[in-house]
Length: 415
Image (cartoon, rainbow, N blue to C red; front, side, top):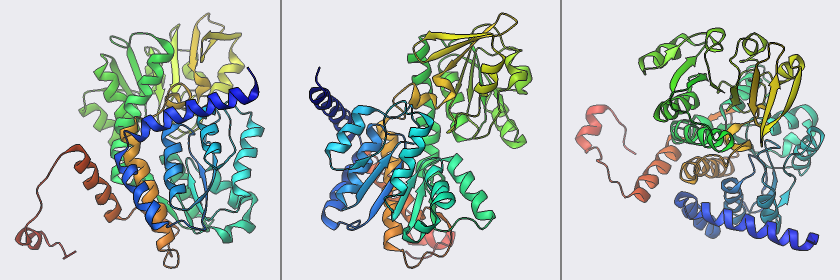
């Protein structure tokens, strides 16, 4: 097959995927039509680093429809889909990404979008924001602000802000109710198990599933595991979340105890070294490990690789590590995000809400660029409510509204 034919096939494959998600993302459809007429991003350069798959591609096209010049890369080398990248290139975007890029290539891609001197940054995990502060401080003057998609990225932003290192406003998209209540819980819950099930082709019912972390993502993973018939065990460092998990009907214990009985392990914490050598040596033969946090540090794969006496590909996207005690531990997708490195990510209907928040938050930054004093900005409640109301409309659901008397009783101001 010639390279020209291969490129055409890639483009057509990407287009089909994008058209499929577009048909299931009515919120973004509406925003796209508004942007086509108003062109709010005319003359604006947007640098975007999010997992490069079909839903993200459609977000890029919505922003482009508003007049933005797009500079796009992925936030994980294993989640980038080459046919999607090809379709965006065909759309006239500047794309720096390909599947399974090396660490050096991935860093070069991130640098390329920063070197485009963006005005708006849309980030997933904080790599763009950290890079421009650490290596391109002279370009900060061009940045109006940015939007952060993930819990991990927000933790990094807050740490920077606490040290007075954050030099431009960032909207905490992940903290919006229409994002974390649905994307993190229902999106992660479904997509993680989609990735695990399609990769392992093993039964979940009757197995012990260990979920490390009981934030919104962990709640979703645990909920879906329970629905699949698993016995769910939660490990936590937060005592309140641990009680919550217990009262939701899950067993709660330390990782060193859970390691001895778990069949599946899913880390969802945003921290490093959650499953380490102490856990590896106590695990059952055939235990399956995966990560649903942003970075590949929650399962200490480097240490597992170091202590293993042998490793091999047990199945596509599953690496088996044989330990001295004879037990084999299986790791999905090298410990990277299992729902994207071993699946297609969250369902389109869920990302419709999250990316609607992204698009409207970017719009908010542009419309208020001369009024932004704080470096950490919550998504305006009006944006959250607008997305929720439109979502209900598309679902065919109507709800009650407060009367003037009720508003007065509750002390609500007139809006």
